[in-house]
Image (cartoon, rainbow, N blue to C red; front, side, top):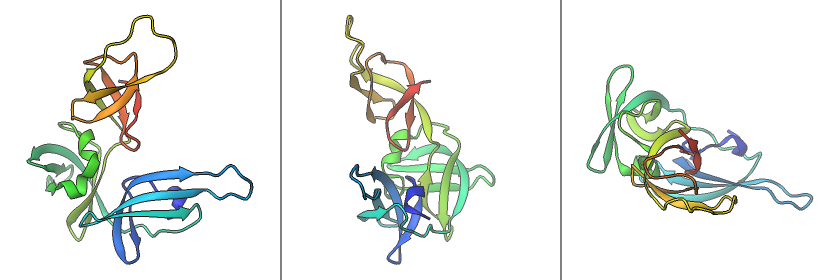
Length: 187
């Protein structure tokens, strides 16, 4: 898999180990002769050791051959999340080392999730590109504010905090990108 194709949630092999991509940062220099680079934040699977890796656009990282199972979120068991296979109803217990920051986007009954298995052991989770969450706490909209877009912090129903436009109010349902963690519009 070329570096420009790698997305958050992919599982790749590097130096003989298995890694899950947690963040991808693209850097394109403006000077002539520049080359686009991709900085990847990887976590070992299993284990959770962190690795920062920089690649050029054409560099190759082999994707690990995993079994992808469509699953629905069932419930939380302490710090663990339990997902149920959509076809054979197998339950997968995913710990914080597997779920990581994605736990902040998981809501009750969430569907269209992908649990990745290696040797029948869940090692990775992939969520839909966007999720709908409720704003539970944010500052009120300022009356008479200018038309400029100034973001403000908002705490969502799952406990995560993101930046939202000034017009978003408490109780509103909004779409959030699971890849970037950014506001993606009203629901």
